[in-house]
Structure formats: structure tokens, C-alpha cells
Length: 213
Image 1 (cartoon, rainbow, N blue to C red):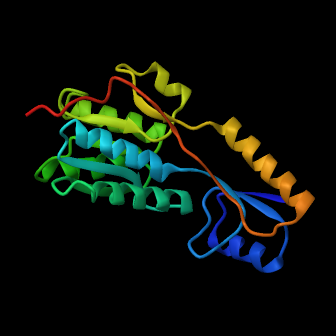
Image 2: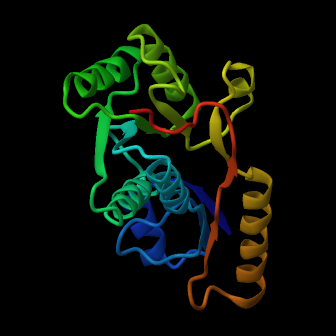
């Protein structure tokens, strides 16, 4: 029994063709069907977009790295699909190279445009801290002028002032689900692929607020 972690398409397709029993901890690549346990980042994005739109934000941006795994690709699709539910909501996916300078450059380009984004959904804790620091350097007050939400929680965010709005990723629950799925496959065989999705839990914070006109 193999437990795989955010593997590439090549690896996933190899395991499918080989018939080796496995559980993918992450999203399956498009067109690949194998048992997996994943965090439903798309559901988190849907919830975040609804929050931001409900608070009057007219331009929301998803801040993510340029190179995406299957889970991150699903999150981008979820973000755009959620935004499409609001006809007057402008949604942008901005990609960066994962460095502090790259994140700042991507955000700087957005601030030069019109309308400027006021709702920011950021994929990782580290990049969230960079986003908050950059906005502060540009005299963009959070949450008075803009809102920032982190897709994944991290203890380091607990030290930030104001407190960061984020989504809790329950890794213990994910591990239990993957273990249960692996045991089921060992006992009963692979059979039909089972897919387990764990929805991130919203954690309110002080970086989310109403858009002020």
C-alpha cells in the first residue's frame, strides 16, 4: 500500500496503470481516477468570495504561485466559478514566483490598475504576511481600505496584528481519513475509487471588513 503526497500527473498515471494499491493525499490530476483524500480548497474559495462580495468588495484577487499542483488548480477554478455567481464582481488571479519580490511586483501591478482590488485571498501563510506588509507599505490600511484572507492557517499568523482571517486545515482529520481509506483498500481491494474531501474551517479575524466607499 502506497500513500502519495501531491504527486504529479506522471506518477498518478503510473500507479493507475500498474494497479498498485495507493491513496493520494491531495487532488487527483484531471482525468485520473484513484482513491484520494484532499482538502476542498475550492469550497474555501467559494465561501471566501461570498464573504467578500457580501461585504461590498467589487474587485477580488486570488494571489497564488505560477506553478500549481492539482489541488491549487482546483482552488483557482473554485475561485473563478464562485466569482461568476456575482455579475458585477471583478475577479483576478495574479500569479507570482513565490519570492517576496515576486509577490510585491504582482501586487504592485494590481494597484496600478483600475479598479484596484480590495479583497485579497492568498494561498499560503508566508505569502499572506508579505501581502499584508506590502499593502501597509503602500498606505493601504487593512481592513479599512482592503481585506486579506489566508487560505491556510499557521501558528505564525497568530502573532500578527491585526489578527488574520484564515481557514483551518485539519491535518489530523486528513491523516485519519487517509488511514481509514488505506485500511479499507487493504481489506476489500481497490474496487471503485473513493474520494474524500475535507472542507477547511473558517476562522474569523480582523483583516476582513466592509469595503468603504
